[in-house]
Length: 300
Image (cartoon, rainbow, N blue to C red):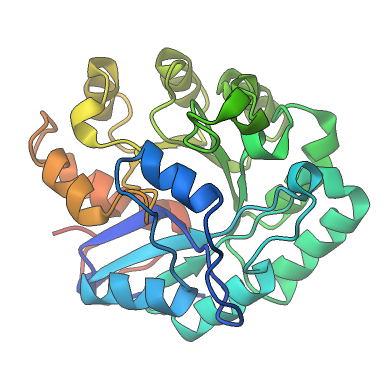
């Protein structure tokens, strides 16, 4: 259980990244600079989990935090490790909810690791990045991992749509966009009907596909991370106001987009007043099973 007091927070950011370990200095150059250039922020800042927790605590927000394990494509272990993210999140449980990431190519070893992360470290979900992990979400290779997630009633979060990873570099850094079509996740939603799924990001160029999956499959949600709201396509705003008003979630993709920038632009788009608190906090609180304090509601 987390120690999040819903009465004390204004929002739940369901999509933040931890890029630095507390045990090592920040890396020089590399993907961080490429990503920063793509998002127009210069060199991308990199936070340890305690720094991330402090950032969100100062803003009276909670967040889901994770790294991304892409060892099959990079040959490198994830830094920080899933264990570090989970252990430090436990120390900052008033604002941080830990997710883990396991590259499906790890096979049986990855499944064993996932079970340990759930039972010994209390992770609440798993992040998949099909582009950087090089797999289609409906590839049966990943199904043993989904079985662990479904068995424990956790959340599977999938990157969908175009990615800033490798963007603008030679050959896109070897990243293949085909893996992030949300229609692949539709198969997962059929085969694991009781597993909660988040389609991360406005899913350019497959926004209509994402909306179709989320309206058709009752346990599929959409997070709004990775894009400034001023660039949201009209149909996403329309569905967020109507059919998906209870299934759309605030996410920033921090640190490439800050919650301040995201919320400033969100305030300027045509979201109904009664829907805004659902997107900012209430929908995520319900999905995560967070309970308000006695006498308090989840919203404002």
